[in-house]
Image (cartoon, rainbow, N blue to C red):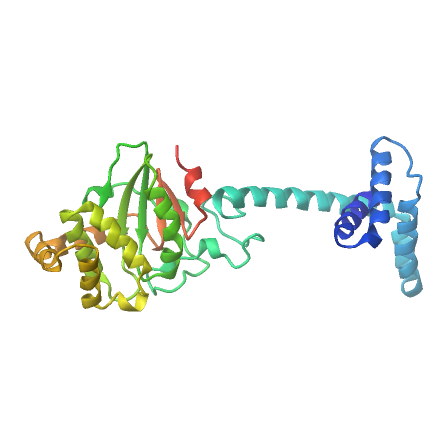
Amino acid sequence: MICILALVVFGTLSIFSARHRPLAKEAFDCVFRKLTLRKCESGLDLRLKSQLTGKLLRRHPRFAKIIYKNFELLSLAFTLLFLISFVYMGIGGYNYYLYGDCNGPNESGFCIFDPLGSNEKTSSLETGEACPSNSPSPKYLTLANVNLDIFPTYDRGAENDVIFIGCYACPYTREAYPQIQKLLLRDDVNFVFAHFPIKGKNDHLSDILNAIYLIDKQKFITLNDALFELDPLLLKDEDVIMQLVEEIGMDSELVQASIITNNVSAITAAQAIELQKTGLYGTPTVFVNGNAVVGPKPYRVYTRLLK
C-alpha cells in the first residue's frame, strides 16, 4: 500500500522536479505489479519501509520496531484515509461546481475551494454588514404566500422564474448583479426584481424605480443597470439620482408626479412587507424556480436550476 502513497507523492513532485520522476516511474511500476498480484521487483516498498523506520530507530527504538512490524497495516490505514479524503475532495469539487459550495445546496461550512467564503457572503438585514457565520440556511427561505405581482416583473411567458432581491448599496449584491444581468437577457426566463434597501437610507430609490416601472418598463431596466454602476456613496443623493433619470431619457418631473399620483410610497411599503414573508436574512437572495440561492454565486449555479 505504501507504493500507492509513494505514487501520489512522487507523481505530484515529478511535475515540478525532474529529480523525482524516476521515483514516480518506479512507484507506478510497483503499483501496477501489485494490482496484477505480482511482487514489486524494484523493492521500492522495502526501501521506503527501511528508510522511514531507520530514522525513527535512532531516537525511538521501541516505536520504530512497532512501526516496522505493523508497517503493512499502517500503510493500509493511511492509504484508506487518503482514498477517503480523495473521494470527499471529489464530492466537494462536484458540489462547488454545481452549487458554488463544497457542502452542497443550501448548506454552510468551510469550503477548501472557497476558503474565504466569497460565494456565501451577504449583507445582513440587521446591520447592513456581512452576515455572521450562524445565519439561517437558505433552505428555510420561501416564496409561499408572497405576492410577487406588486414588484417590477418581466413576464415573457417562459418556463423559468427568477426573483432577484438585492440592495443597490450592498457590495455583495453589486458583485452578483452581472450574473443576474445575463439571466435577464435570456428569453427563457421570467424576471422579478425586488429592491430591499438594508444599507443606508435608500428607500427613495424604491419609490423612483417603482414610479419609472409604471411609466416605462424598459427604462426601469436601464436605470437599474445604471444604479449598480453608480458610486454607492452617491445613492443617497436624490438630486444625483434625478439627474441620472434625466440621462436615461426620462422626465424627472413626470417621475416625481407619478410617485404622488400613483401613491408609490404605499406600493414600496407593501413590497417590504411581502419580502419579509420570504424569511430573507441578507442580500443578494435569488429564487430560481423556487430554489433560494444566497450570496454572489457563479453564473453556472443559477443556470443549473433552470429547466
